[in-house]
Image 1 (cartoon, each protein chain N blue to C red):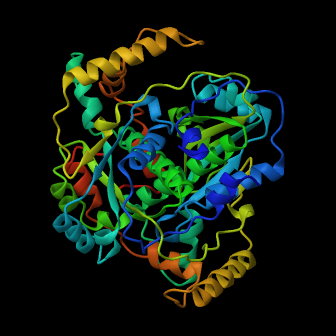
Image 2: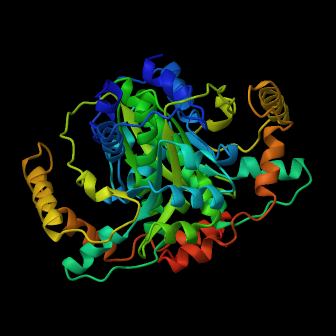
Image 3: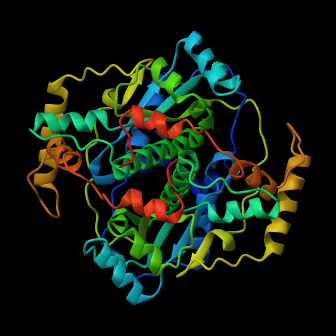
Length: 245
Length: 245
């Protein structure tokens, strides 16, 4: 296994950072790495807002449910799916932007995720740690207001970056046979496999250094999917121009 | 700049491969790298179908609009957003799956993209080349049928992998100042910046080794967004359980 693959298999979220700043030149290298990712139909549908003002950081801490490291991380970036920049090209070339297509929403969102993951890999290769912040979608309207996002742009997730001041364990993942299938989906998963994985996750949560808890994977999933999640999302997206038609 | 960041900034799609197979052990390393990516709320919402049957590969060639390399690449993987596996956990724990939430659609889709990008980075670090195949969404119902996908699973994109038999140029990206903004979005982009980038892209298309063409970025974008795109997508997703409520 080469060093890059070893790094990719060793990722864990970092939520405590030293005070050391990230040099601007390195930050630009990371963004350049993100830009290097594949982009659907050459859309380049990602815009990143670098949030530096302490009072705005604090509002993100609160809207994300009290994640204090958003306030203290050396960098906090908000990754936005951006159809604004490219739809402006319609006007330049005498066409009408076909607003609200589900497919356009998808390509912009996927672009953002590919871009962000390259930034993450680049950051970790340079010794930095990261934490994705999906919690900004708790109140995406406030997030959009704080960043003065125009129509056809929406905030997908945030990202904290800095030098790690903790060294947490890697979280155990599902067995590879469960996620990689040959030729057809084949729905039949042996319940014993999930039960064994649940035990692995339970042991991880009980033995990990910080924040021990009592939970298995399947219990967590039943909690996640057994209730409504961010029910404001459809209307928020529609108001921003992502109508899902 | 370190080697990993240099690699990330040097990505280009590969559409011609040698016949050399990818060893199963390496394929599993790549999938393990994908599993190492962050996953929203520990969802692990990615399932990959490895398509090996030549007649099925050929159907994917056709449904993706005649991309012959899908048929000849040493590996062709279809990345699926999977809420099925995790929603089954609701039943295990006496809960009712809250089907059709937009937010659940988003976390599964984003999970897939983060996972896939790690697979791509791992593959390129091992000397392989890749090409994402968004074209499977031309006919996602047929793709789902061919792979026997159950409800609450949908095919996001395909990925061709193999040893490169070509060495194309890197496609020039937007200037970093356009995609990275500080504190607020700031809509004002100097038209001269886009005009200059258009010239860069035009020069790239004219001078590249394979498939020269006459196009600028803004023209391409007006073509992409100035018309409906895959208008079947919303109904297809709804039929699979992704209702976007």
